[in-house]
Length: 134
Image (cartoon, rainbow, N blue to C red; front, side):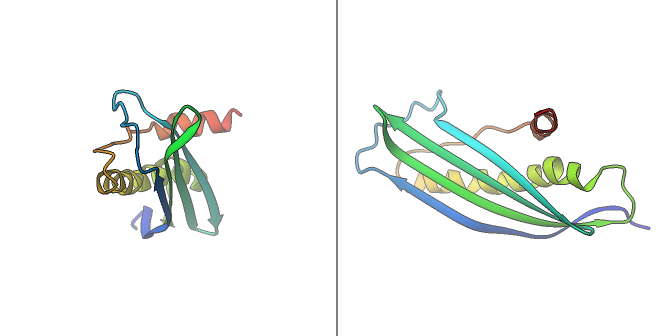
């Protein structure tokens, strides 16, 4: 019998981008203030993972670039696995969604003229561990 998790769907739920007309171009060696948030909803053997990216680039307390991207992944547990549904959602499910968020932001940053900006990888195991201990 097959065991593990199956991807049922990956959806872009929301994508908001704004910039001022004259952006003080970013120093790509220093990341703007950004935050990744992960939420999981478990319904039977289905895991719904919502992952969001929020990013603000401020100069002198003026938001010059603002980004909000929300993706949802729908996964299904098949057979027996050692990993709990919650662990899968916060670690594996989040890691599966993250490249889609990075790609969406990279495309937006290029099309908006602020340059090729790539958000670095995230350690979802560490994020989940910190979440459990808070």
